[in-house]
Length: 219
Image 1 (tube, rainbow, N blue to C red):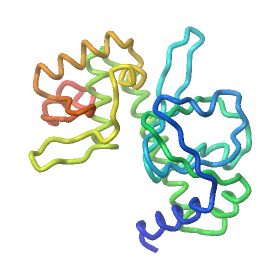
Image 2 (cartoon, one colour; image 1 turned 90 degrees about the vertical axis):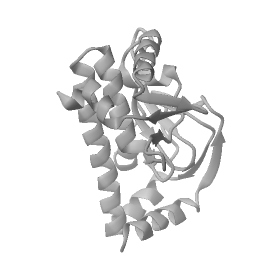
Image 3 (cartoon, one colour; image 1 turned 30 degrees about the vertical axis):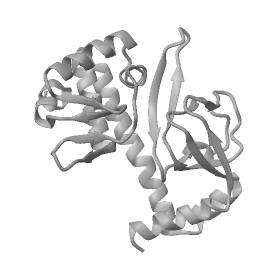
Image 4 (cartoon, rainbow, N blue to C red; image 1 turned 45 degrees about the vertical axis):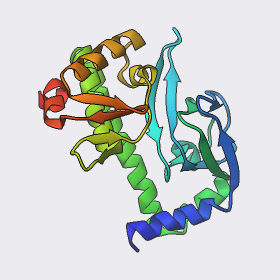
């Protein structure tokens, strides 16, 4: 079975679930909550984040259409330890845990896609951990743009790369582990060097090779 067919099979399965709509910036699942089912992103973008005792947010994962969560709870039922917020207006389809477990365990191709989701998140998390640990704020911000380009980038006819997820400076700060003010300063530096641009609420990578030199990817 092709990847496209597997994705359609997953989408068709979740279509039987209950539809939920959330407005932009709505936190619909809090740390300590017991999820009521497994969610599938039908449209929009969702972020998973943690909050430090001082109230500082750190975005750990961004989900796009076709993704499903919470993955760990889907296999091992336990309360959520993270927060889930709509980055944009979103439509989610939700099925109960028992249905989800039965679906992935009875379909080898779907199970492999499920494992692939976990591996992608794990690899991205390791790379981000490396970026957040090493380097200065400038290199961290540039590095996160490199990750976003690889994960959510769409190459345009003019050669620029559009980051499909609409992200504000606050959200970039939560991705890089720096303050909003620092994120704004470093983003402006990258703009002044003509490495990135902003159009209609989306970041564009205008010079990927130059951005890489500013990031930890080139060190």
